[in-house]
Amino acid sequence: MNANKAVSEVCARGIVQTLNNRFNMASRTEFIKDLCTPAFVVDLDLVRRNSDAMQDRFLRLGVQLRPHMKTHKTLECADIMTRNSRRCIVVSTLAEASFYADGGYDDILYAYPVTSDKVKRCAELSERLSLFHVLVDNSLALQALKARPLKQGKVWHVWLKLDCDNGRAGIPHSDPAALQLAKDISGTEGMKLTGIYAHCGNTYGCKGEVEIKAIAQETTNIVLQFVEKLKAVGIHDVLSSIGSTPSCSHPVLDMAMLSEVHPGNYVFYDVQQSLIGSCRHEDIAVRVLTRVIGHYPHRNQLLVDCGFAALSHDGGGRLNTGYAIIENHPELKLVSMTQEHGRVEPISGKLDFSQFPLGSMLSLMPYHACATAMMHPVYIVHSKGKVVGTWTPTRGW
Image (cartoon, rainbow, N blue to C red; front, top):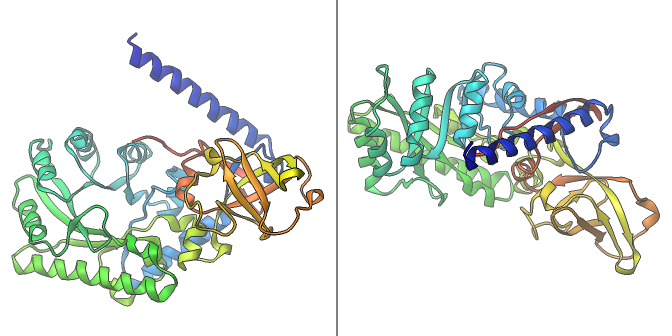
């Protein structure tokens, strides 16, 4: 056995053992208040409510919802988000794509700029599924796809990633090279220019519905105008898709002219989304449960068993309550974390330690649910505080 295989098998055994331990712990626990902590808990009723609200919102607009899986990465939540159709989803890693394909999903869009090292795996998925889409924003990616023609008479379904002033991935919409790249994709044998894809991540800098809608409108306009440019050069039947949880939580009427939208975080929501204006605290479906493990009156602090390995550092410094909101305790602040420890102190005044006995539980509302979920190998799912199951996310790239 070679060294790499041996290491992989040891790691796999360790992961399986961890999952089994977590599953057994949850299956023996009736209520989340009795869980071993730290624990990532998901309110099933809120997940269903959030998912239904987004589905119904775009049904009314007549636009296809293609939900993004990157927040939760589980089959169970995906079934809720697709209403059990098991079709028409977005993923951000090939590990997710394979996981969902293995789980019976089809019509999967890998919404990440493809590079040559990933073409082989993309080809295998394209040949295996009835519909697998890839994303490009440069000519080198196009050449890498061209160098690996698909078998079985299949064609590459390619989406052009357009940067609509978000400043992350994508070819700038105002760059003449964008139209040329679209023409090159459309004109390449064995390829189909399936759609134009834009992420309006600049909505994450918004405060309130008015600002969100302004960016949603601008992004929608840019994408639709680009589709018109394609028609003017003889390229027709190209889909259009924009997405972010803020823009899709407060869609503008012109989004009805789009083919699809692709939000993802909305199924959980989080404190960040509440600050932007996408949701209310009552819509946030996830928590990290933690217990008090130490009293330190000399520094006016509690110690809890939630460090950054259970919460993540995302959002640090953006909240007056520290790294999270401590539910029902607006007077407390999670001031710092090491890997497995968190320090909690009052925002002002002296801490009443009698309110927080050793072993008592605190409930943390995460700043960024996607980052926090990534810290946990198993999610504990509950309804009104009663444990109803566990969800196991996929991991890796």
